Length: 415
Image 1: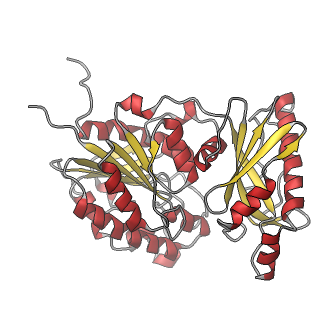
Image 2: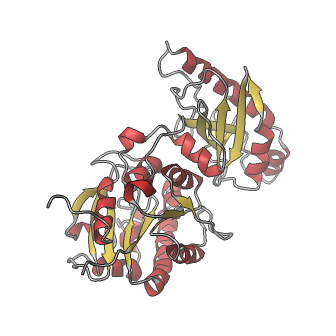
């Protein structure tokens, strides 16, 4: 008799991988914190390390999640903006161009003083976004919607638009960049860049005197007086995950970007209770509860935990270590309540070293577990601990074939 099919849970610890942290005695946060529950999955399964794209490539959260879901990001990726827009609830139509944005703080010389405006978040971001929504420039409608924390989305709609434009975000606290066409002979791109620059000028005029920013300045907080766009793109054409693998699927995530990626790929977005957003202090216990509920309804569940990435971008190794501790506590609930017919994968989408304040091209730890599988000698969920496992070094695109086989959901190749 053939083995019964199993369900699949993929847990993505966003940006949790790291490099040696001086504040943690030269250890990574995953090495520094005792994690008995994460380690249980390593000790009762098989592990390895994983390159989100390929060795040395610094993956974004978007391209990494696409790869984790089994897609070749080099073929299907069309920019981060559309995923963020869809995840935030905007309706993208053919010909639209979407850009991911940060609310930021600039001075009168357009020097960026804080790329995240003190990590401003809802409801302030919603009120600021509403004041920008509906601007029209040269016949182009500009739709703005707040996203996760300090993020927002700018959607351009009209004739003659192109996503082939440069970012306005310098990637660090420096002077704001002007948008440019990637090809100076591309008239549509030149027009689109002109619209984006005009939008930023109008945006700054509207935001610098906004009541929210007057209150923030009075309280000694950085004003969110500019919206900085990047990652322009059009709606991507992607084969549906549910059809590709023949399974029902959902995601449990609070981050608009991840929700947008999953929507585009055909996964449902599972509703979350309050307190389970993508912030640093998101309630991971409640999120695990939603995962367990979702497993009653779906064959495949992807869970994203964003907090480690936030701490990494802030360069706060001790805060990241606290996130590891909270993750392990939540994983303990999963361990005690998960069904027997389950394949569990625990990994990261990329490393966000505290020393870099950004993503790196380092491989990430990965552990596979299901009841009855052969164990290897790895015993610790960390960058070095998982490297001892028998899966060796794989790519994120290898994950789905492996878990589908562990879940008894693959067809034999050959006779």
